Image 1 (tube, rainbow, N blue to C red):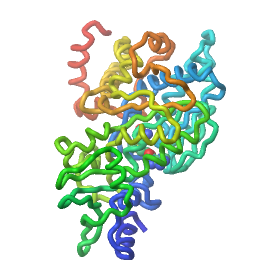
Image 2 (cartoon, rainbow, N blue to C red; image 1 turned 180 degrees about the vertical axis):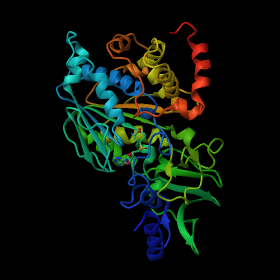
Image 3 (spheres, helix red, strand yellow; image 1 turned 120 degrees about the vertical axis):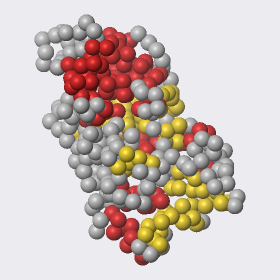
Image 4 (cartoon, protein in one colour; image 1 turned 90 degrees about the vertical axis):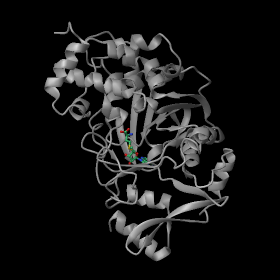
Length: 418
Ligand SMILES: C[S@@+](CC[C@H](N)C(=O)[O-])C[C@H]1O[C@@H](n2cnc3c(N)ncnc32)[C@H](O)[C@@H]1O
């Protein structure tokens, strides 16, 4: 039974399904669900994420994790749990950056000690992954939950929460209504009805949000459970959430987002037709960071900080990495420059948000949120960062006739380079 057949079967048997139920099946049904069916992120997939843009993303996160390890008193082990780890690429890049000296003749430094203390657990509800395989002190669990306890370390996620199923609501004649998916003959269509749960109205009320007439919005009811699970897994440490989203006031602004934020992507193109291409296109909705912070507080997580990805990566030393002299074959070096720029690009990945929460970890100033001198010295110890075949080739994507145009770009950027 494919994802689409299962949706049709449920509607025929029980009537309209909520958009959240539709999205759950379309993305995660065991047979033909979008994420279940194979690896979706990267050049061959439908979209790319920060880890696939450049290994600098993992290296800079390693710098932030290093500081967290220090703040917690250099525990061994220091566990990083990454739910929604997908292909395992971020894990691979973080581990590579954190253990650059292992086995080398260089004198052991603190970074090496951090690398030795680091334990990394990739978690994903999809079976698979792979890039993390073979790395020492790295494991993988196939789960939709967070079945760890007593952790000292960090729960880290990138583009996990925006891939969770959301309910859709709208305001009709002054009443909150929910959007359902149903059948009109053979065609899947939406229709509105009574909200399936009072939690939807309660969530909006708790945020002080009143939708305008005709406005559509998404509500992720899983955020509370997610924050509670993250808090439960930690004895001491941090939750670092990186995702596409904004505070509730902006997210639910009728003036700016009257139609909500649900997007559907097929082969790097936004389709805006979620009911089509079921199991073959991605769907995501922006994260409500206000609710995430509130849910965290209720679960025992202190809100520590919040920033844009551009700001976060810049504070951790992205400009320093960008200034490094080019290494490797010119084309690879140039692809690397473009990939790094992509990570902080306004209107793109740079506008993603980073939120830090803590449990029994005090109220430290984390390097990613405040300019400081410390990251620079650590980055110096890391080896050159070049995109690998595991990362997407943005140069090829942007400039199909890359070589000729590349020479022009290269000359313009580094007239003195060899
Ligand atoms: C948009 S992809 C991001 C993958 C990776 N983090 C990256 O940045 O490239 C979302 C991933 O989250 C996984 N996922 C969604 N809900 C999950 C859950 N509740 N627990 C664990 N993984 C989940 C999906 O299977 C998918 O691999």
